[in-house]
Image (tube, rainbow, N blue to C red; front, side, top):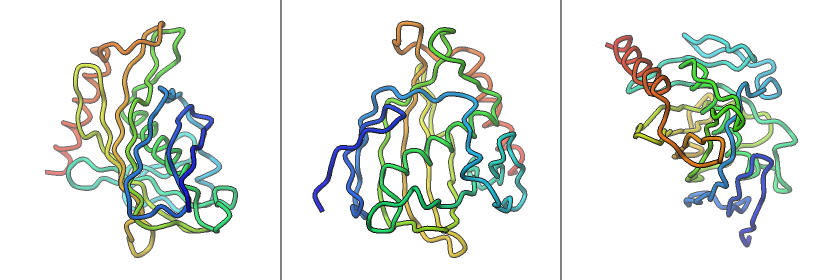
Length: 208
């Protein structure tokens, strides 16, 4: 099937095809804002919290700690996320990744109020490697961690696996930047950097 250009409500434009599994698709973001709080109740309804996890204020199961700083979110596929072939549309996976980013940042007590306040975190890069499809009703985990932090950027790494057999579904890498009131990237605020470093340090201590 020929690939097609798809525009999403988040402002992300991707080159994606519904059956393009087993290859990497680079997503060219137009600085889609990671707004807080992000409502994800529609994904989390009826889900069983993962072992050793909590539940966020909007009902998403989150908090299972893995080695090397990974954290888990459990979700389920909904009918409206499917394409004409009966599998999750490739574009939906960017939404799954955004949910993971926002939930992890909320666990760090990092909030973004918007451009007007000079506190906006924007997605600048997203790379997706499709391995296997998800279908209606499938339960899955998103494993997410902060992979690196520089003066102006936060980088995330995500793995999506299907339950209960933990089949690999997708691998992703994302980069977010902090924007000022003129939509220009600026250095991450000192408070944000401090919270990220503290969270990483506490996570390592809990795993030792």
